Length: 229
Image (tube, rainbow, N blue to C red):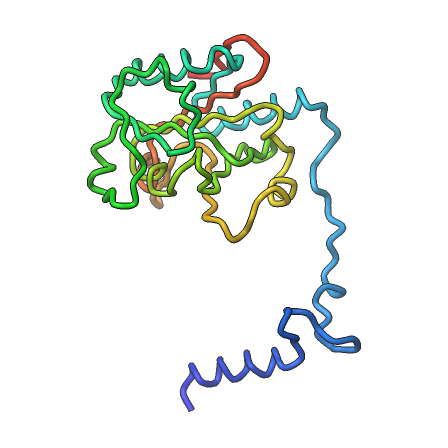
């Protein structure tokens, strides 16, 4: 008997009590849901909505994201300015992105197509997307491949990503709260700052497995304000 057969045999024996719906019959020794306590905290401390948004901005900045704030009416001008300052000549646009966000954009718009190759996307300067949810305590933004976010590849290959977060509607305190809003069957991308890695000597290299520059626009009722640069 091979090692593979031994392992699969143990798995089959361990699952003998499992019903087709993934639950266990009464009296089973494998009452997983009863054995695991789930009364852990879902957020740390008591914060107002405004304080939660502030925490998100602070943690995003700590992760070296560039954070901007604007009112809804200012969003198109902010996106246009960020792309212009970047010198972007081309920008990938998800099919469901609000067209009003791009009215001040001069760059050529590249559609998010299934046929696009990594090589083609690597030649694109920037990408603009919305998000699914943002977790303040970890400074994490989550994309779920929705129409206004596009395929995962368009936010991993281009070197510059502008991500729009609606505040306070899309901001929660913690990862457990974010998970409640997400569909685990969707292609989830969790982003905490620009892509970065380091070797054993702690030499930091950015842009290895994602965009080198992440700019987050927090859209609410406040006037424009720069959090960091």
